[in-house]
Image (cartoon, rainbow, N blue to C red; front, side, top):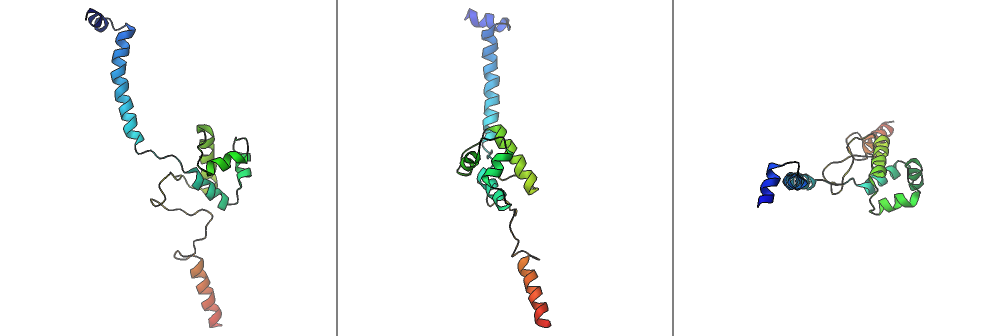
Length: 141
C-alpha cells in the first residue's frame, strides 16, 4: 500500500507512469477499435479488373509499381494483400488512370457505381440510343 502511495506522490516513478498510461492507452485502443469497425480495405481485385479493361496487363502494372513481377499483381488479384507502400502506389496508379478519386473498397459493390473502360450502352444517350437514331435516319432516306 505504501508503494502505491509513493508512486502516486512521485509521478517520476516508472511504475506510476505505466499505471496511468494504461488507462489512457485503454481509452485510445477502445476508440481505435470502434473506428475500425467501419473500415473496409481497398478492393484490389476490382481495381485490377478496372485497369485490365483499360488495357493494362499484370506485367505492365508490375513494371510501373515497385514490385518484383507480375506474379505479385496476380496474387493481389487472387485476394492477397500488398504491403502499405505497394498498396498506396497501386491506388495512386488506379486513380490516375481512371480519373476517379474515390477508390472501391471491399463489400461495396452495390453502394456506388462507376464505369471504367465500359460502354454505357443502355444509359440515356448511350450507344443503343445512337444506333437507333442512326437506323432511323437510314430508314428515312
